[in-house]
Amino acid sequence: MTEIGVSDSPVKILVWAQLLGAQNLIYAEHEVMQIEELGSRGNCAVRVEHDRSWTDLAEVLSDFRPDIFHFIGHGSKGDLIALDMNESSPFPMEGRITPERLVATFRDDTNHVAGLFLNGCDTAHWAPHFIPEGGWVIGSTHPLSDDLGAFFAPLFYGYLLAGNLDSVAFDHALNDLREVATDAEMPTLVRWIADPEPSDFLQKIFSRQAFLLCAADEGSLVDLSTALKGVRSALGTQSIKTRVKIRGSSTVICRDPLPAQSVTEITRALDKVEADLQHLRTEFPVVVRYIDGWMHLELKDRDRFLLLADKIDDSRNFLLRKVNQCLPAAKQLPLMRLSSTIRGHA
Image (cartoon, rainbow, N blue to C red; front, side):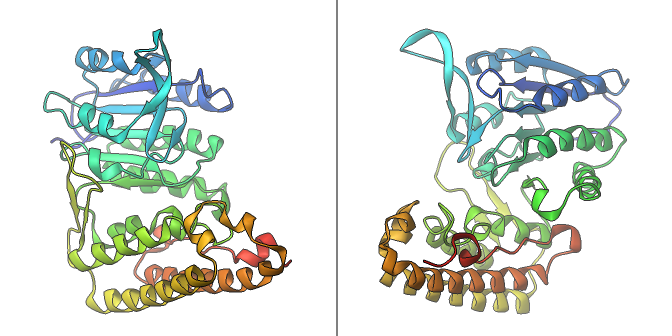
């Protein structure tokens, strides 16, 4: 597949704006207008579709044949929130576009799309499933700031249309945002390809909620056991398998071997996190099993819980520091706050 932005043909961008049910995204229209303006360049063509039903997408893709599909709207746990047809109504209604449907759409042999930019919250959780062959997916691993997410996209496309590879355009756009935003404000966007280089591979496997939120935050521990198993498997095989077997599934393979010493140190740090998780699970199983489990603890148990929560937060930060030793400055993973600094003591 020819690299987008470095060929002589105009880059075609299809913007699929789902804003009817996302009116709280106050910068979304600005994002649309900024991308539309790129169409005035000789090397870019832009088509914007506002609040169309997902069932119309196949026809639009066939008609326009875009190089890039750009989604603007809400996301949740890998699903896109978009208008769609269903049996209960003759009119499009808001629904969830599941990863299975994304695979069916974007891994189709007749599809011309080489790049997917899913600009919404939690859109990258299943990204390895629907990376276009030879292409890329940009999405978020966490709730995404409306303003920075909206401003990032035009920056990225500007660098891409200037003749940069998508990887270079992505890094340049993030660097531009770092000049005006704090680390805490930076968008949680990641770029997936089928064969990332080692530092990119490591950053990806740790860019998930289980390594972003402290133990006292909702959802932090529910996914942690699965995340630890996934990371351990990825380090051992130096690849990432898709979560379920669906048509078009792919395996993301690290382009070059990971440093053996680094893998050993990271694995030892994983052992410590797993031990602390088991300790917490033994004393407070409800917290590990349910998203809001800590809220159901008796007041007398809060201090003990926060002590163990801080312990597992510390061990995860130790793990992240080991990973960061393998990463360049631009790809450093943020450390998490301790639970006691958020919830306080009982």
